[in-house]
Length: 256
Image 1: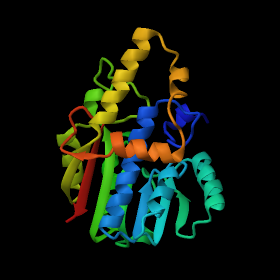
Image 2: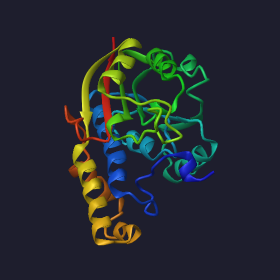
Image 3: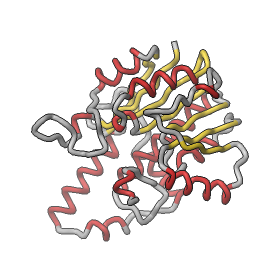
């Protein structure tokens, strides 16, 4: 299965293009680790964790005692397990689960302090089912942190559906907030990452105007983990009420 079929981005993979998108993805996880530490979240679930790059970032939070990454892809979880062997983090575990079908809350009922699920709900036929499971998993003061693509930036077909074959739903701020609130959550913050998106469009314009080779351009950027994290803080740190101009809508919500 190719990365395209898997529809994910690993910011730490220097062979993958789209630098600004990588900063966006990493910036969200860095913000999630900040939330975890600020709220002293001991037990964390990374739902739709892909190959676990963000799960490990969450595990580095000083407050984290246990971080569970779940995903439906056997291939990506195998990559995550290989990384786990290299990093030897006893606080991290991975589990194959289908957010559409599995009752994954049964063994984690009201035991999780923070659930992180980025760019996930748009992939699900019934995202409300996953949200119900998340609600059951969280403690009474638990937090849900999620992101979905902003419908404004989604290419759509004549029927008004996303041209991305992986995306089953389109979300704007009112619709994603409504969906989350129907599951029993209270939305505490709506955030965006407009600066990274602006830079991505600016680069696209320059590349097309001056006929740069897109792969050559990627080599201009420092792809080291340290540089990626620095520029994620600089250009892609989620900001409150900055959804306009942001490719993704980020919600922070609390269990009611």
